[in-house]
Image (tube, rainbow, N blue to C red; front, side, top):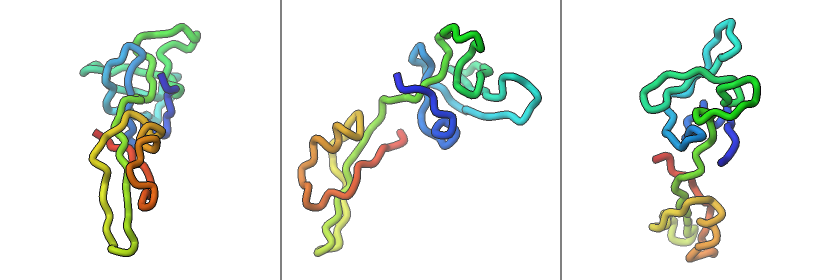
Length: 116
């Protein structure tokens, strides 16, 4: 599992719990409390430390937050001569995998993570 990244989570990247449950609505609250972070896990609102942990003792919880590594990456290509831009038709689990399967290095520009 990829460590929780508060800035990426607040920017909308997908988050999951240690138990693999989908996390939605990650929010920071400006309150005088030890638990400033809240998130919804399968319809239940839970509070967290800013590092995505449930417990300050370091004890693991099935609700601890992690970045969701499951995703889809696609490759973007651009032919300057014909002024054509196109996306690869295959989806990959990681950026590295997308780059390993390039069909045309000549026009390759970048790999893009889809937010699905």
